Image (tube, rainbow, N blue to C red; front, side, top):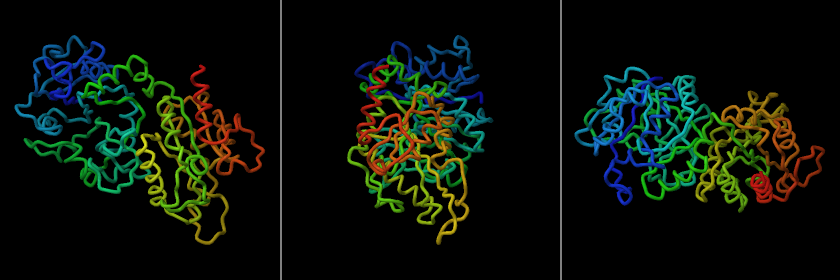
Length: 433
C-alpha cells in the first residue's frame, strides 16, 4: 500500500485558547506539528504518496510541508471550498485512488504497526477495514459489532439506542479502503463516515474490524492535548506499538471476573464480582493488556449458541465499560471432548488445542498482540487455568473464588484471595522493576 489520505481540514475551535493562529492538524505536540507525526509514520511504513484534504487555514499546512520533497514523500492537496465532512474530500479525489488506500484523521496522534493492519486487510479479503480499540468510555463512542471472524455486523453511531449491550469495539478513526468503497460515497454532499456511511456499508461490502491496543488518541481539546504529550514523554505511545513486545494479564472468566454459577448460558445469569471492573481498570492504567481466556463448553453441550455467548460477553463488556474498564479481547473454547450426551453439538465434541489446560488460547493471543509471555500473568481459579498458564510460560496466580478452594495438584506461582489481591501482587511486582 503506497497511498494515504489525511483529513486535515479541522478548525481546532476547542484548542483556540492554546493556539488560534494555526489549523488543528498543525497544533504543536511537544513542539512538533501533529500532522508531522502522521507523515513520519507513513514514511516509515513505505508509503510514497499522501493526499491532504484541507480547508481551514490550509496555507499553514502547505507552507510547512510543500510538496513533501523535504520529508521524503510526495504530498498532494485537495482544497475544499466548503467543508464536506469526512467523506466529501475523499470522494472528490476518487480519480487518484485506484489502489487500496489508508485514511487517517488529522487530529489523531497515533503510533501503529501499519504493516499488521494492511496484512489483516489483505488476509480477510476486505473491501473496508476499520481500526477499532476498546476504551474507558464506550458508552459515548461510535461502536461496532462483529462476528467470530471479525466481520462487521452492525455499527452504532452515538448516541446509542437505550439499553444497548455492546462489545467494547470503538471506531478509532483510521481506515483501509479498496476503491470500490468510493462507489458508495455521494459527491458534493456533506457527510460523515461514522454517522452516514458505516451504519449501512457492511450490508453492501465485506467490512472488517481490526482490533488493536495501539495508541490512537484525538487531541482536539486542551486536556486531551496535555494527556497526549504526557503519553509521549512517558514512552507509552511508542510502547503500545505492536512492533514492541507487550505485557498481558490473562483472566479466566467464571470464578475470577464473575460469580461462577456453573454453565452460564443466559446473559441474565452473568453477575460480575463487585470488584471486577475496578480491578481490571487498575490493570488498564498500569499498561497491561487484559485478555479473557475461558472454556465455554456450554456450546458443545448444546446449552446455548455462539450468538447467545456473544450476548453474555456483550453484557460483561457493557458493565465493565460503564465503570471505565475494558479488555482487549475475549478468547473462548467452545469444545468439550466427552460425547454421548443428549442435546450435544457433535461438531464441538472434539479434542482441540484451545481448551484449557492446553495453552492454545494464550498462544493465539500472544501471536496476535505480540505478547511477551515471560512478562505476563494468568489469573484463574481452577487447576486447568494454572496448567494452561504454566504451559504457555506465564506467571500463574490462583484465586480462592470460584473453584479456587477445591483441592488441586497443579501448584500456582501465587495463591491469593481474589482478583483484587491478584492485581495488588501484579502492581507490586511491576512497580518494583
